Structure formats: structure tokens, C-alpha cells
Amino acid sequence: MARVAHQMAFDNPNITADVVEATEFPQLVQRYQVSAVPKTVINERIEIIGAVPEAQFLGEVMKTQAT
Amino acid sequence: MGLIAERDVQSLKRKFQEALTEDVRLAYFTQKESSLQLPGHECLACRETRELLDEVAGLSGKVHVEIYDFVANEDLAKQYKVDKIPATVFLGPAGGRLRFFGEPSGYEFATLVEDIIDVSRGATGLAEKTKKDLRTLTRPVHIQVFVTPT
Image (tube, rainbow over all chains, first blue to last red):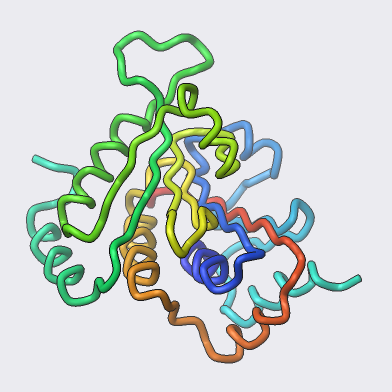
């Protein structure tokens, strides 16, 4: 997930992708209710738990573009 | 004894030698390293992350790590929207959009290495379909991936 997130950010200048080491930022773990990793949060509202295929990840990212 | 095992140092040097084309610049935001830390302001991984990035820069003359103080270089931190440390940010063609918060060790070390290669070559290995769909993305997207080292 981390790798694909960074690749997407490299390929599109509208995307910023952060890889966050959960154990070092307990306040974010609490805020985003991270109970298992990887957990991906897109625009504060879309969540993906666990690793998913690239196409599925892309689908979730593209949901942010709907009006 | 470094953070990167000696056998990995040799294979990574070869890998970078073969794969890197353009120079890659990384900005590392940290805090002053001292034995005295104010409660609530400890950055336990800051020193080790700096050491790791120093070792990564030592693998290739094309990898450059710029070290900034999160407080003293506040303007730069703001420019790259760095709100916590340790933070490692890819500059240049990556435009500050590829970031690591925390130490990129363990599993994420491989991500760091592959990212360096992508940025150097100016291309990712995403599927053509993914790249095509991404070209239609025009609104800002912020992705946060929470990981652990193992």
C-alpha cells in the first residue's frame, strides 16, 4: 500500500502520499483508529484496511473525484 | 556496524549503480540531537532515522540528503506541510508529495529504496490502466498509509 501510494503521488501532482510509522505517532493511531496495519486513510474519510490490489486502491482514490 | 547490514550495503550499491539515472534529493526534518529532551517533545526515532538516511546517501553519489531542523527551518517545514517529525520528503520531480513520517526501516526500507529508483528514473511501474485513470484526477488527494516496521 505504501509503495503504490507513493507511486500514485509521483504520477499525479494532485496526490500527496504519507507513509506513517504507526508506533511513532500514537496520537494519529488514536485519531484514525488504527487497530491493524496497513491501514490507509484517503482524504480523511475513505478507509482501506489491509493490503488490496492496485486496481482496488485506485478505485478508492478515484472516489474522491466524484461530485 | 551500520543500520544497513554489510551484505545489503553491497547489493544496494550495485542496485543503485545500475538503476539510478538522475540525482535524487531528500529533505529530512528532525530536531537538535541532544541527550536532553523536553517531556512531550521527544523524537525517539530522529537520531536513528538520520543515521539510516546518511547510510542511504552513502550508497550512491546520486542520492542527497538535506537535513533541516523542524523548528529552525519552520518556513520550509510549512512549505512541505511537515507537521511532525521525523519526516523524510522527496524533493525535485516528486515535488514534496512522497513522504515518510517515522523511520523508514524494516518493510518500509524497501519502499524507500524503490521510491528512490522511481524518482531517479522519473517513472513508476504502475499499470497502464492505473496511469490512464490517474491522468483524470484533478482534485487534491491526501493518502495516509499507516504501517509498522515488521
